[in-house]
Image (cartoon, rainbow, N blue to C red):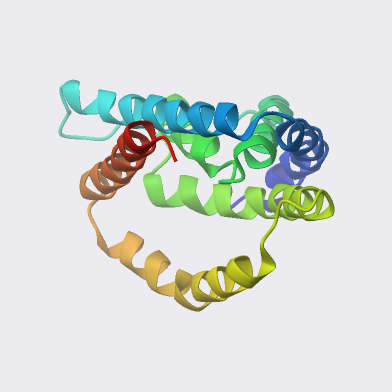
Length: 183
């Protein structure tokens, strides 16, 4: 993980996450629900699309992310973190994998380093507006903190194609469930 590059994007992410979170808490919850489901569906379709391409025996060379693009990546990450609270990794990972041919695990590492600042700003903004149920959120956060290292280990042991398929399947399942139930 290039922490200097992520630092630049992180600063942009903080400002954008705050603005997006302020916007999200002010709009109708049902509109936000449908927007989130459609966003997940779009990501699932986007992530599933590369499987239709013919794979070559040797992977394409990894391109370095130009430093001039890091602010844009930070802005996109912050917007997603603030508006949908799922973390900018949902934007950063596909961009790094698709546009720069970065290996999935490296892209996920960069995304994790990037989303932390935006996630904290979004959490503070949602919390300040009264939109956080701390009795539910804190146990969920604790569970995530206690199990994240297992997930990272698993991600490093799985083939990239299987990891991408699993990710796409979870996104698609969540999107369909949200659109069908409407709750």
